[in-house]
Image (cartoon, rainbow, N blue to C red; front, side, top):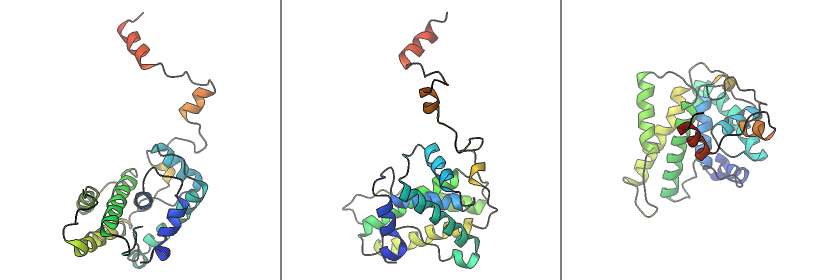
Length: 217
């Protein structure tokens, strides 16, 4: 699919000032989360990324992610529409190496996104995730040929594409209920913010802490 049609170029633009992970990995993370959860609002997405220790998303990226998640949930809920799902990967005008690496990153993102949903897995789903993890573990030097070339790439791409399709029939829950952010108010302040306001004691420097442990009063 052309980069303009797939949304690749739109994502590149929205995320150009945010470089924690690739846009393929973000898309995979979003998809993994959306196979088991309802689409959250922007504030909840911001909290998810904060709890995963990512830098805050630019406003345009956060809006795009929120809208894409809504579309993805809508698509995956319908068995017929789900088969049209596409991971965010550059088109075949790009080098095979770049496409393989993007698929690797998408797979790792999906593993992270689905992993934080705390969902139980069937034996078949567990096997699929194990195979997806193998794609996420691909190691390839930039000038190294991908074994099997285009044919092998298309095979693993199709497998990866079908994972969210296969996972999407489960009952969904609010993102706010997952263990990562359960019990946290979306507007809750971080520990660092509370410490800066003097509402929590600042952490003791490591050296002093060890000394205190070795010399109890």
